[in-house]
Image (cartoon, rainbow, N blue to C red):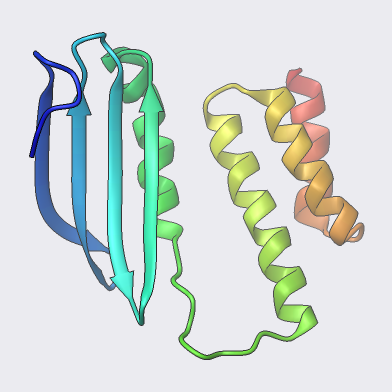
Length: 139
């Protein structure tokens, strides 16, 4: 593989993401940028999830949230047709997970945006309502 930036470093290893076999990529570019990416194929669906940062220090700050996201990741079921209730629940859950990850990084305004998106879908969601109060008090 040809390096994108001369002087950079590239690593690749196999691992797992939940029940899926995956390939983990890590790049350290000569300009200081850091990149971690996970790639997997399940039932013909390609999943690629990445974490980018301007420095190793910033990458390490986001790594815990990245790992938390990967452990909570659930691949789609091949050929499954989702009901409107399942789609709604999935979107609310996604908003909640992303808000949690942003809160862990002290990005409260961004987290509030995702909570608001989730509440727009399900205004009665008690977890999101409580999270919104908590985030507004930290802002």
